[in-house]
Length: 274
Image (tube, rainbow, N blue to C red):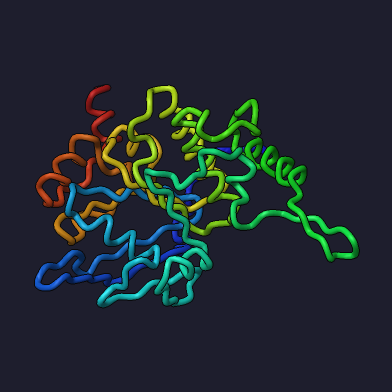
């Protein structure tokens, strides 16, 4: 597949939209009237310190937690999630840090776990897994995503951390997810493995995938994100294009919870050149 650089079009309707989301635990507001939207071909970085509300917002989107108030729309239609199974059915995929891969089996088995391809014998009375077809589909998928793994038949436990992360992402892509949420995808990875994962995120954006990236790495955010959303103690601090913020400003807003004026990078560059 020929992958070209692609950015979300201005004014494009969001594929996922959360409006006025609030969640209270007793007298504590985990979220207070928070909005979040993601468009096709867009990487939205969801940022904030521990306790900011990121996990609660993602759990609501994943169907694991029910919001007290607010609405969720997918492809312009209001939906009720309710359960993780319902969220997956509607195209919401989350890749947690533990990856949820089966270490003792190979890559095709992990990709097709729970949705194995089958072939029939004896007039359909006997069905077995079509391992050749699953291997072919896995090779095609990895090729499309530019994931280079020489032997797809080795157990996943023998792969590097970066390779394991890319397999978890590929599994979500094959499920035809409408939104992929990645929780700290480069955490605890070496430099080369981080590059592998970040390159894959860039490729996915070029293929018009919608991604929410939860990360504490400001370098990762500045490289791959199109937009940043910062939460502080359950409230929205800012929601802006990454072109209107720099790394230091991101850190300050995450820590203080106070929105700062947009950074005009082009103007700064012109002043330096002058």
